[in-house]
Length: 493
Image (cartoon, rainbow, N blue to C red; front, top):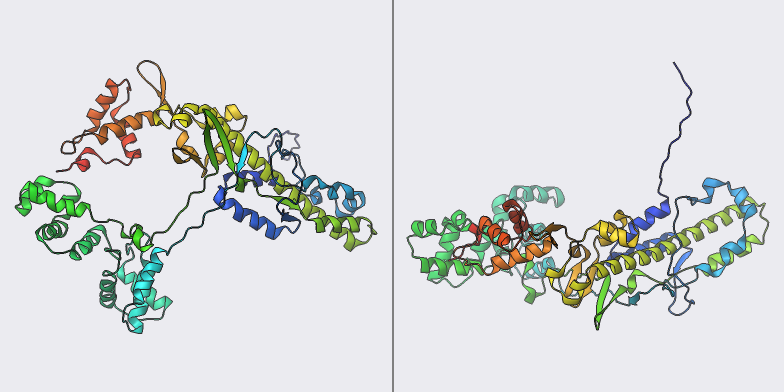
C-alpha cells in the first residue's frame, strides 16, 4: 500500500571549494608548486604575479569558504538570467589583484626558501655506465639491460629468473634460458657497489666476501655465510663455535668482518654518486630569538597569484555589448566562472597559509620548553585534540596540517608528527609523554652490556624503579617502535 509522508533531514555537504581547501592542506610545500602549476594550466583567468607588480593587501583573515556558496552559477540560475543581471564592476574590481602576503593581523613571517635541487647520478644510471663498459653481444646486452632494470633501490634482484625469461620473450621478443641469464647476472655481480644484483641477503654478503682479499678471517666469514647462515642470523654463537670447531676469538674476528659488510648495496656508495637523493623541504622554521620563539612559514606556502587582467578586460568589453546575443551571453558566463574559480583558488591558498601558521604557532606554544632546549624529555603529551581546542580548528583539519609537514629547528628537521605523543601517569600522578619513556628505554639499551643484553622483563623493572609503571608488553611495543631488536639479537661477543 502506497503512503505519502513528510520528513525532515539535516545533511551537511561539502562544497567543491571546501574539498579543494582540504586537499591543499594535505599537500606539503615540496608538492604545492606542482599543484599550483596544474591550476594555472586549467584556468586561464589565474596567473602568477610579477614580483613587486601588485600592491599587497591584508590577507590576515582569508575569506571563509562556506557550505552555502553556490558551486557554480549554473546551479542556481540559467545563463540568460545571469547574463542579464551581471554586475560587471563586481568582477573587474581589483580585490584579487594581490600577492599572497599577510597583513597586520598576521603575526608570522615568511621565510623565502627556494626548493633545493638534488644533484648526482641515480643508482641505476651508475649501473648503466658500468654495463656499457662490458664487451657483450646484442643478446647478452638485452639480458643485462633487463636485469639492471629489475634491480630494486636496495640493490637486490627480487624477480625470479624464470619470470625474467618471460619478460624478455614478451617485451623484447627474445628467446633465452635461465642458464644464459645466470651467466650475465654473474657479470653484474662484479659491478660496484659490491653485492649488487644479489637475490637475497646471504648471496649479497657472499659476493662481497668473495671480492675481498682471501685471508683466514675472510675464509672463515665465508664458511659462516655459506654453511651456518641461519645460526648466524639468530646469533647462536655457541652453536657456531661447535659446528665450525673454532674458539670465541676466531668467531669474533670473522663476525666483525661480516658486520662491516653492506646489506643494502643500492643505498650505499656515496662516493660513486649513486645514491638517490631525497630532500626534505621544511614547511616551517622555528627560531629562538633570546628566549622568544618565532614561527616562520616557508614562502612557497604562499605563492603570488592574481586574476588575469585580460580576462577582466574581456568581461568589461562584453558587459558593454548586447547581452541578448546568445554567444555573447555564453562568453560572459564562461569568463565569470573562470574568474570565480581563480578567486576560490586564491582564497584557498590564503586560508591554507593562515591555517598552517596558527596550527604551528599552537604547537610551538604548547611545546615551548622543548623548542627552547631541544631535550626530548621536555616534550609534553600532546594529541590532535589539544591543538584543535587551542586553534578552534577541527581535529581532522589539524591532522591534515600535521600530515607530511616538516619543521626546521636549531636541533634539526622534524616531522610535525614528531611533536605529538600520548601520555601516561607516573607513580607520583604526573602525566608524561610516551616519548620520554622511549628516550629512557633507548638510553638503558645504549649502555647495556652487549654480551648480556637486557631483557624486556629487566627493562620493565628498571622503568618501574624510575616511577614509570608500565607492563612488559608495553615495553616490547616501545622497543619495536624504536626499531630495537629483542635481547637475543642484540647479543655481541
